[in-house]
Image 1 (cartoon, rainbow, N blue to C red):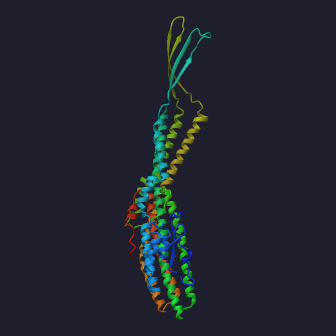
Image 2 (cartoon, helix red, strand yellow):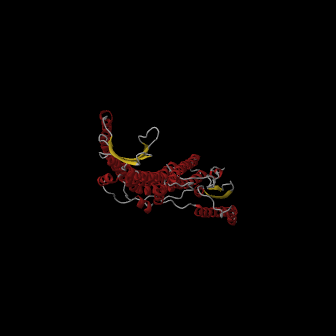
Image 3 (tube, one colour):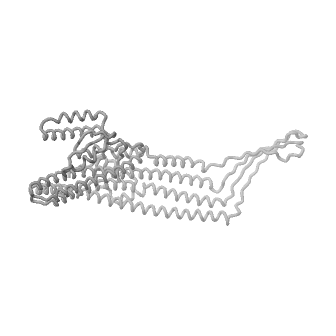
Length: 504
């Protein structure tokens, strides 16, 4: 469901040995960030390492510069050097992030890019152009026919009579108009299909972008939870050393840390998948690294479902396609009935006799001809019945499409309002969950709460944080679906632009 593209050599790997718990059983606070060639660049705090692992190290931040910076802090007592090294590594990590991070991703920019570059949209535009160019030829007369013949010449060619004739077929009974209407209905359907494809691509772009946002937010929440669990693990070690706790508490903290890292890997997988889908939709090849996403914003009120349904019945391209198909079926029925009317053929000819003993002679011919539709029972009438059945099918399909459009609008509208309420509720839940974590942590440090309480409150906070991110993503997704259902702008671009206030 999510994003990002990690190319070979595009991100410095984190040394797993450095990220694992230390030999003494304590979780280490640093990770070795390596370059694409495997050489170590620096040791940075784990909360930075997980982010650095998605960005290349800039050339100007080479290993010599980093080593010199680290050596400059490696003076004094061992404890002083450790603090200085951690501070220097944090500064280096921040500099590297600022220099290497790709530009942020904005949904409005991606939607515009998809409209301009998406191959499926270009194909739909080409089909529309082809259909529009087919309207005029459909109602045109057939090309006239020119014939030259040796006419009624004697066997010894004593005279050579040559006749030149031009013939023009003229369809009657409204056949040309019916053919033009069929082609016009096909062009109208192609235009509506282009509009539908534009909305479909916009919905897919929004879905992939929001999956990407959710994956990135999951990684951030897991980073925060990991930092909290490291503090709890240190507290448990301190309590164990004082004989106030059992070794099981530290082991549970380590197990929780490993679980958080596992969850983060799942988020990385979803991020890579979402970014691959998003890059394909905007025709980025190669996609390159993905930038940071923006939390979607929550808009105010929306029109009632009934008003949106009425608007959708006017604007939905699928209904335009259905109406075009009905018009085309009606034109086909008229064309089938017109087949019972004979077509007219007009010809004009001139003949000149060469080597005529009586002197040169010229003749003029003109005439009319018609076809005889005498096989009405076996040919014309079945075609009429077939066309009328297609017309009934097109009319019923249009009715079914109207019902489906109304249902889609009502469903998307209800989902959108539900997500809006869920977001408001989670803004009330998260401050309570944060206070519970702080209270449990303080109580555990003073021996007034057990370890399970700390873990439970931390997990609940993570759950509420991720639920809020999920509801924000689903809100934007439901808004995109509602815009697609109505085929009108309802504020998706505005929601993407204003962002979301993270204050609860």
